[in-house]
Amino acid sequence: MTAERHTSADSSLSIWHWWVIAGGLIVLQAPVAATVALAVLFELAMALHIRDNLTLNIIMLIHPFAAIRLWQSGLPII
Image (tube, rainbow, N blue to C red):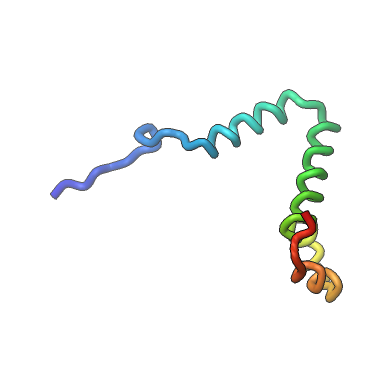
């Protein structure tokens, strides 16, 4: 029995890898203000849609609030 070795050169990039590459190239070319605005937009979208984002995670890690926990247990807004 021989074991096959898979290297990174053997596997092709998935569509998600291409999205990450495209996003990195866009961010490199975009002004800082546009990049920050896009990050804020994503944070707001995640907060409204899945009621969870990096900002809420940090707040709840530092000091858990019952109001945030109650709000997160509800249905998505968008």
